[in-house]
Amino acid sequence: KIGDTGSPIQVHRKAVYYGECFPHESRWQLLQQFDNNHPESEMNFKLSIPYYQQSYDFRKTSPNYQNYQDELDQEVMWHHYEQDDALTRRDEIAEEREKFQERLQKTEHEYELAQTEYKALEHEYKNSSETCIHKENELVNCRITMSRFTSEATDTGRLINSRY
Image (cartoon, rainbow, N blue to C red; front, side):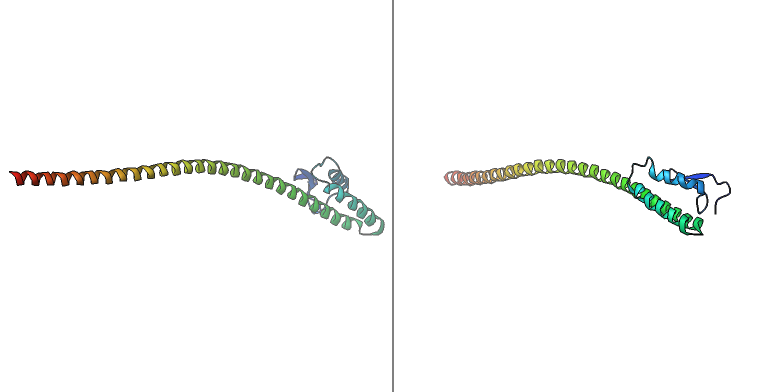
């Protein structure tokens, strides 16, 4: 069933006719699309050989050639667009992979910065811990000294009080 205008529409950048089947004269255009200038894959070439063979067999043996030919056209177009979808998906996956690679590099860089900062903080902490221990020792020594002076002062005060 061909559309009213019979003019081509664009699907996946290829000419496709309105309706469920292609007019006979567009069939060779369809085959040329499969054969020419499609560097995406060898799938087009692989589809066209069985297409030619089946088309020849239908014409030679079938009284309902046009019906069989239309079914064959639809099957070939389905495979062709399925391939385009797969190629598009492959490109999308490649883009996603590239984005993941960029994110990975960014994350690795951030990790390296965080690791460097961690090591610096760890070193500072160790130094401050050593400083704290040293200061605590100084405090203990000061307390001991103060205690000693307090004892001496007390003893001296007792001596003064006892003599006078």
